[in-house]
Amino acid sequence: MKAQVKDNVEAIGIPKGDGHLLLHACCAPCSGAIIEELLKEDIRPVVFYSNSNIYPLEEYEIRKGECRRYCALNGLQFVDDDYDYSSWKTLSAGLEDEPERGARCLKCFSYRLSRAARYAHEHSLGYLATTLASSRWKNLDQVNQAGEAACLQYPDVTWWGRNWRKGGLQQRRSEIIREMNFYNQLYCGCEFSRRRLDGENQK
Image (cartoon, rainbow, N blue to C red):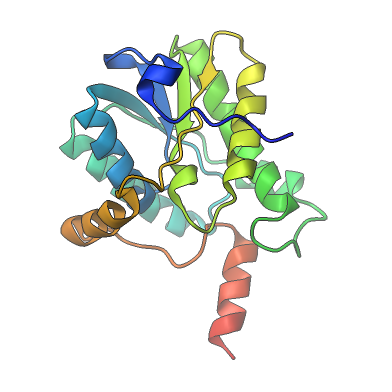
């Protein structure tokens, strides 16, 4: 079933100011334009970095550091979730050869957004969104399916399935990457996508 996308603040009813929206952030390049847009709308999200899919640990730390740097620049709370690659790899067992946008990606989104929804519930943050939806390499339907399912576990948390690729945000995304000199990764994060990238580079 395709999740319903709620694109604007009025449609979802997010209050202005601090302490209402938890923004799951996958990396700084995907977060920059989204955070900037939210601040323009007077929404100050709590940024939740939960990405146990990223491999190796050194890569995880680099991406986390860049995201933390951008949040500090904008005075936003940054929450570092536990890194648990072994659990993530267990859930992806049997899906190692799936292509990008395949079944492994959906499981990955579900794992990360379920953790985010739980945090939102535990800290009275009524709305959840993710920067995963900004990447053209990701399937928007999968992201929204995972987000909706995660929030259904917690009746006090509402999923905000905004399409962050519209309204010039893709162009602004590229501009912020250059302005901030962000580390801009070439693979989604997991060892399987990296293995595929390494194979293509060796051709």
